[in-house]
Length: 567
Ligand SMILES: Cc1cc2nc3c(=O)[nH]c(=O)nc-3n(C[C@H](O)[C@H](O)[C@H](O)COP(=O)(O)OP(=O)(O)OC[C@H]3O[C@@H](n4cnc5c(N)ncnc54)[C@H](O)[C@@H]3O)c2cc1C
Image (cartoon, rainbow, N blue to C red; front, side, top):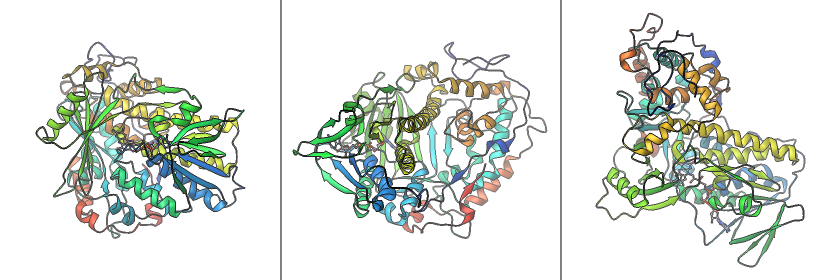
């Protein structure tokens, strides 16, 4: 990253970790109108369906794999194609289990269920699910005042405070001593702190775009049941090989049970095995290991009682980070770490110590992770979805979103009936851009850390393997001109909205050191924190206790006031 002009902020290891740049560039006016981020969550069973679509270009679809990816894809395809006569069959090995982790979501999962017409009151209790207002990052920075911050999900009410947040952050980057930690500006942060649910009563019509926590195994069973109800066929069998046609596409798969199953389209949801997309079609794979070091995890449940949090907590440990996910029946905990920096036993001991389970005989589950993506998610007549297409480590719980978006985008292409090579290319570019944008955001968590305790954290901060776009984004931040406009227009920081980029950079304390700050001038200090605190406190009082809300899950709300958010 090119260093900014003027005296630099403190730089570690002689490397260009983020805190570089000038200490007092001239403040710029932030045009908040250019930060618009639109969320339209008013999905319903007709959303995105094309009533005038021509005949489907495929008649038989075979999905290999019955994990979350397989069943979500089956339901998304079934919604558009079963009624039009397409046969969808899911094959699942009786010998290979599902990964069985993956218990947090982004708010997009809500759109998935809404588009299927499945109510929260039906699926949430069945999956021991809870509401999620966002993620607390604890211990990622050691800068005083920035040891902990919350990455919120959006709310309509944030329209009232986002402008103030962006203003204060930009002023602080420019050296003004104003409050610029994200937590006091977002209602989701307050709700999480108070263990409230992001579900207001009808009389308070401000919706919050919340995510969920859920039991991964129960979610798989629920989706399985729903898919069968909607006409998806299921076969328990172990796929042993894919048989290629003369043109190199997949003609059929053979099973250990002695069957040969043909289809026009195959969906590879076989998990990290990548049976069809990699093993059969040899699609090249791009590893992300040069800037996402974590490649293993260890998981352990703990009991839950009393109040139920409405957030995920991600705590930085010595060689990675630990998740804590509240379900109605237990906490899911795990440690995501890099096996280049610590052994599996060291990781388990550290997690047990973190959870106070050193003496406990609760069994831990160890997992390997492969971080990266295939170059072509749609290759010939094979679509890869889920871990088979790639995986970015679970820090922002984005994997289910990749599944949903890959499958839904594919339906758009199928609806148009265009299976040409050009269509393949457009599709793959879209999915790859999504992966790369998400990767940049996740990398930022590591790159901006200033922990000194282990080689793992020092190596992350010193790592120079950054995309050009990320370097530009950091340079823009350090220039003091603000990143709201280029991120709002999605020229930089693609895939994440303005509030997320400001939350991470400000939350990690990427500001001039305390001693370099000046007293804010009138314009820099225009916003009064007491007024913002009051507004957030009064708004949050409308939201119920989380545990109580889970006991009375209300039907989905509809209405024009809830459909669109502008920031
Ligand atoms: C540590 C960790 C934490 C995670 N946390 C999150 C999170 O918080 N949020 C999130 O969104 N995601 C998370 N994920 C990712 C999430 O778990 C997966 O994206 C999701 O579960 C989908 O997995 P999958 O269906 O692709 O693969 P799997 O669950 O591995 O399913 C693979 C399927 O393929 C079948 N199969 C394999 N071989 C054969 C064969 N030869 N014949 C027939 N069938 C076969 C298996 O039987 C199985 O049904 C996490 C992942 C890890 C590793």
